[in-house]
Image (cartoon, helix red, strand yellow):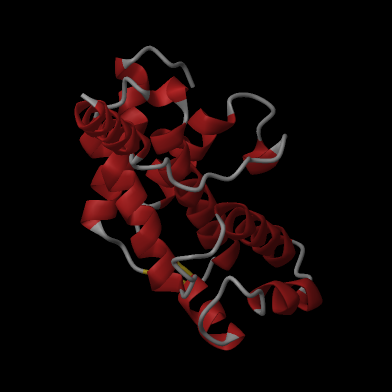
Length: 184
């Protein structure tokens, strides 16, 4: 009888242990109030920016590239961690997360960089480029989120090629807002 109780207890613990093992939501940043030029719904603004800015190559406009990357990175996490977006189909959410990872690699951002550090750095770069504040640009390009030298990051931000797959994913994610009744 004692062995049977021990076996049942062990099975129960294993079952509970299995319940504890689950995928955690991706690291997701908190967008600062007023970021991306809106005091309204920051999520819809981020999706609008990502879907619009990635419809073509971003050449010679590192501020725009940094803003678009910030929006993509943020929404890649947000769509996969916020209960608000549970009605967005799983494939779209996963593709946005995948493109966040791909874009990070493309511009030299570490795949393990915290989402908040990525967001803050990219938003800071956008502001510094817009203000023509070269000291701030150089300081931000030397951020530890990057795995390549600052001049290479700058070159990559100056030349974000058009990618039809990225465009399709960001456009799909943005169009889902209409499908689930979220107004711009």
